[in-house]
Image (cartoon, rainbow, N blue to C red; front, side, top):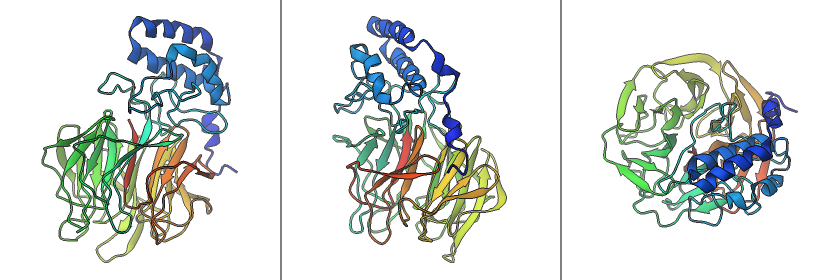
Amino acid sequence: MDPVGIRSAFTPGPLQQLDVTGKIAQISARVRAGSAAREAMKLACVLFVSCSALAPLAGCGAILGADFDRGAAVDGDSDGGLGSSDGAASDGATTADGHGGCCGADGSVDDGSGGTDGPFVGPDGAVIAPRVVLFGGWNGSQDYDDTWELDGARWTKKVGLAPSPPARSNHAMATLAGKVVLFGGFDLAKTPFGDTWEYDGAAWTSRSVSGPPARSGHAMTTLGNKVVLFGGVGAAGTPLGDTWVWDGASWTKASDVGPSPRNAPSMAPLENKAVLVGGTDAAKNDLNDTWLWDGATWRSTGAVGPPLATHAGMASLAGHTFHFGGAALVAETWAWDGSGWTLVSQTGPGIRYSHTMAALGSVIFLFGGTNGAPQGDTWTLDGSTWTKQSYLGPAARQNHAAVTFP
């Protein structure tokens, strides 16, 4: 069953007819000649495009061979960033059917949500393979200050990151120009932060900029070449209804006209709009209205969204925005297609809220949250079906933040 037509979005196309072996041989020669970073990404893209016809993806290991040498490590571990132990590309874009999500038709990097940013090169000159970055959270008694990365096959804890954002929960993150942008959250005493941090895959950097008032429980997402931030709860404990935009150098207050003030809404990009749904108002009422931000103004869609949609997870994949869980404590998955919501599934990870969702390749990854006790499980959604993964990873937690990077 495929209620919103996601599987059709990954139907193999004409690019599979490429002379893959010949193309790889040409690129590999140029890699050895020296232009490694640029050509490595080209090689990875050729592999991803072709692998939907070469299922399973592990079969690409023979094509990679020694020429690619398992990729360029960007995280200091033994997984070479773009390559895994079997020589297959390991950006997490692969599902059991061998379909990947690396490149668009123009050869650009495609995260599966319709974007075409990249490729991006890290501080060491190595191409940064797509992954999910997770930071912080709360386990019911303590806050975390750890950074984790998920490459689609395993979680890796990043070590030696100093400085790093202080331990916190209820913060938000988004990605812009090859960097993760983190803002706000609060500490164990529920004192909100008003700081901005950036992560480039190797280090965290504190940005000494003025910007939104300190807050927690806000939402952030990327739209075009900007990060948009909305709402949350300020130092006075009152929900906020302001909109701010980060351009990579500074924050600008954009609008106070839009969704009502609220805590814990969910937001994700879809095509050329940011989709915002739900949250909790000052009277502690859970909301389920849906709004669209076009980069300049908010518009109410009038559409009724998932029930009691607060503290939920949301991410976009293949022309739809998917919403799961929330304070209503229902295990429901809903999809927004740009004009209305459709109930996709009532099975999957189980009731929870304060979890995260992020798209990587052809699936959405969900981690953690709480159903009364913090959770530490990882699930994938292919657009219609949830699958529990056996990855060992971060300790059980809730109110963390996670985002697709770069």
